[in-house]
Each structure stands twice: as structure tokens, then as C-alpha cells.
Length: 235
Ligand SMILES: [Zn+2]
Image 1: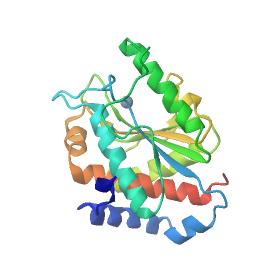
Image 2: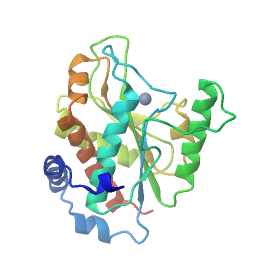
Image 3: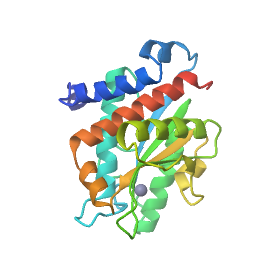
Image 4: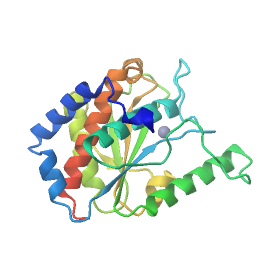
């Protein structure tokens, strides 16, 4: 706990990006906070973890580690902003139930636990963080996917627009419905988006994703986008 309360060195950079996004959108923190009778709760999901490393880059970088680092930056920023986010995980390890023996069983148990956590959080609005991967090196850029619950598409479009404008202006990807196979996104009963922050299979994306500054910028834009959505949401 003590560690999380420190003022981090990267806060000034994050604050600059966050304020730039909010200013461009014509929002302010006060306006974001005052409009909601029942405040939405930011739920941050660092994709994969534990027995499930997710995608693996050619240099061995694990998707689960990048996801967690961005998620922890987002959590720290959100707390600095005055929010109390809920995390689906805060470390590399996951405590599985003893009956989950195989890796497949562990993954299933973990996904069920995450769905349970989200669905038991009143006012939850889920932001799931992942990295993309592809057999060829060329595909690159950020893409946001949205779940089936009302509001998810609006949050995804806001988030995609901000990420594209701030971090990859040449990006032509658009917010899209999530694939039916993504268990968490299909089973939560709240607005939910999944952000593929870049392609581990693309050398330029991977280099950026391995830097503290880029992860901080991602976290700041994600928080700004969530705040914009929360201000306009009726939940
Ligand atoms: Zn993933």
C-alpha cells in the first residue's frame, strides 16, 4: 500500500497527457465528478497473468507483464485523481483454487473469478488491457473493442478516438464489437471495453510498449477517456 501512495516520477508526464485530452474534449475534473448521483466504478483488468502469459514477443516479452504494468500505472493515476479503482489482479501471480490442476482449468477458474468480481461491483465500468499479436510483422496500432452491454460502444469510440489522436494519428482502426470467444467481455453485465494497446509482433509497437513513457501515456489517455465517458454516463 505504501508504495502506491508515493508520488511517482512520471506523474507530471501523465498529468500533461491527461489534461491535454480532457481539455481537447472540453471536460474538467469538477464537471466529471459532479454530474453523477451514483458514480461509476473503474474496474481495471490486466489481461492474462499467472499460468497464462498471453502473447509472447520475439524477444520473450510477455503480454501479461505489459498489461499489468499499464494497469498499475492506470490504477496509480486514477487514485491520484481521487478515484478508487477495482483491480482484477495487481501482481504477476494468481491464486488459483486447489482443484484447478491443469493450465486450462486454471484459466477457466481465473476468468470465472474475474467475471464474478466485475459483476459484484455496483456501477462497474470495465477497462480490460491487452496487447495484440499477429503472424506477420506489418500490422500495428491500437484497437479498442466493446462488449454487448449498452454504453460499451460509446466508451470504446471515445477511447479509440483519444488513443488515435494522442498516440498514433495514422491509425485507421476503429472501435469494433469484441469477438464472441472472449469470455470476460461476453459475461460481464456492465459497460466494458478491451484495449489492444499495440502489436507485440510489430517491432515499432513493441519498442514503444517496452518504454515507461509510452505506458504512462497509454494509462493517461485511458483514464481521460474513462472520465469523459463517466461524466456522460447515466449509470
Ligand atoms: Zn491478451
